[in-house]
Length: 102
Image (cartoon, rainbow, N blue to C red; front, side):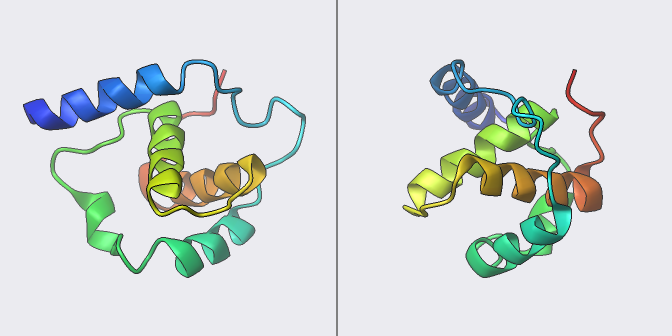
């Protein structure tokens, strides 16, 4: 992993330490809804190739959630926490396949 990628990841982790884990409210994530949100808001900048990089970022589902939230804030998208969780679920099922949160 490149040095600047590690710094970005560390900054994102620290910025989101207080965030609740997805699914803590008992709501099941909706991968189909996440796909629609991803295609509407994210795919213009994030082509499918970005998820197949050699130096994968993120390395865990929590890091994936933090990165989705980071880019949501960067693009000034008004996504809810549930919508973020759904995008994470879609990406995890179709690209990353991280184990479930504990």
